[in-house]
Length: 98
Image (cartoon, rainbow, N blue to C red):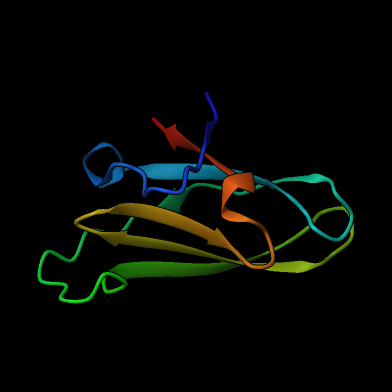
């Protein structure tokens, strides 16, 4: 089941230690792009700033138009955020891989 990312971070306790797949629409050719499994990093419990935390960054080429998207997964005690370059946050969907 695909879950639309909201303005609040996804629950870290539900995602930490799992892998997720992401789905988003390429902003250049408007085709759906799906990622392979991405690991959710452990939350940094000693983060002092709201943006502090552990993160993973990957690059993915759109299979239709070859545009490169940068994907960042950030995890901190407040939750998990999925960022895709040049794609609005509410246009990113995630799914826990089991």
